[in-house]
Amino acid sequence: MKSRRKFIIDCSAVMAVLTVAPINLLNRTATSGGGYQSLEQMNYAVLAGQLNTLFRVRVSPQQVVALKLLKAPLAPPTPIRPGHRLPGDAGYEKFSLIFSGPKDALLASAIHQFEHEHLGRFEMYIGQIGMPHPDGVRYEAGFNRPEPGASLLAKTTKAT
Image 1: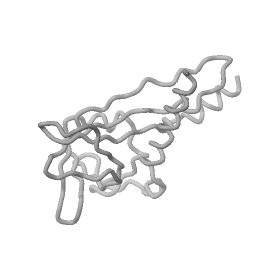
Image 2: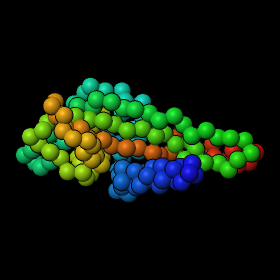
Image 3: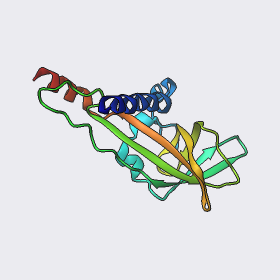
């Protein structure tokens, strides 16, 4: 039972990575002056450091929806056990961003163009979670991706 549960969690994590980090974002580079940023250049600390700030989602040239970053829960790292096979997500940072937005401007579960005062412009996949709250609608972006230096960790662990 435990291995089936782990398999489902691992598959869900892979799907989250595929929806959060589209190929076209990997080719973009950061520019100054509020230009495009790649999510690949923003780690958990950078994104979680923006708690309680506003992110603007450009729905169309005329319509912008403001989302407030409410939470940024971080999952504990996958333990590496000596003598056992290296877990597929060893060295990955796993976290989500929980936003709140207005009830009168629902956003589709899709990749949206975000703008932030300190982070610049970038694209990110969000999806609505739960039922609307009295204070707004909740959205989530999930991340499960290698941390910087994770490939080095994997090589070191396999060599032992």
